[in-house]
Amino acid sequence: MELWDIYDKDRNKTGRTMKRGEPMKDGDYHLVVHICIFSSDGKMLIQQRQPFKDGWSNLWDITVGGSSVAGDTSIDAAVREVREEVGIQLSPAELRKTMTIDFGHGFDDFYTVTKDVDISSLKLQYEEVQQVKWADADEIKSMIDEGIFIPYNKSFIDVLFHFKDHVGTRTAADTTVPAAKPL
Image 1 (tube, rainbow, N blue to C red):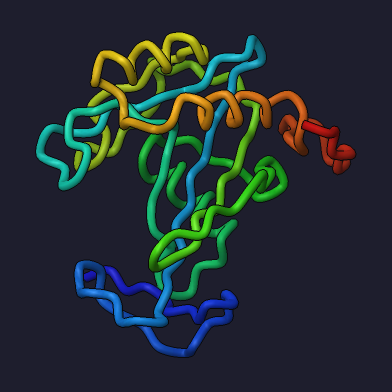
Image 2: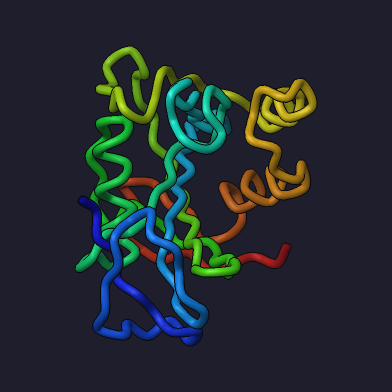
């Protein structure tokens, strides 16, 4: 049983939790994270969801995404989700939060990291991920057109790739916080 912390509209924890799958009450929110791992040559690691997954089954998606569990901070959830779904151990210092999108009943924090990984050595979580591969923005947008990638707005894919180069991303070796550059 997975428990989520409940937040108010201003992203303050309420001290209450809920079980995953229960309907959200009006005024209750939960935290979701997405992590985009980019290679040094500018490609994003993408995953194909399992055919038996609820929601977007069998479609390709950005590297990793998932809900924060009770007790997690956003960065804790990001590190945990990457480790669980694709078997990559990241430190919080490697991840850079690039944006938050507020949605109907929650907050979705997006993180980016540049890290070259050998996909043949990854340990994929069977319950979530059937395969991974590297893809550039044009390939992902073509996959959206073909109906085999989650139907994000293609300009959103461009934004994610822009963040890789321009907004606060850093490599594992870089412990300084780079200045944000204008979009």
